[in-house]
Image (cartoon, rainbow, N blue to C red; front, side, top):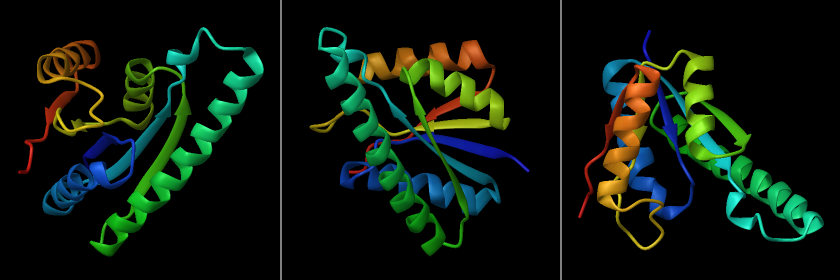
Length: 144
């Protein structure tokens, strides 16, 4: 059985991506794994106690967001696994993809007010990720 890995930040902006990857897993009969990465690298100039507190809160948020994603999948008849990691998104995506034996990595489209990447940067990120892992990386199309 194939295994789809989908990194998600959770929340309403992630629902279209989650819905699309859930539908894809259901259509193909694949296993589904949601990944949330608590990446605090943007705080590298802050005081250490604050960084630890923020990282802890991000992990808790990630766990909550993934429970919500799992519930969305379950409502569609798909049992999804949830993984929360600390670190940088790129590195953790690679590690988790290899650990779980992912056969496809799915990412949401760029754009939107909370997007992590612009279009060109997302395309480059996906291409690099696919080259490095040897796993197909698919960027979902934006739903207007």
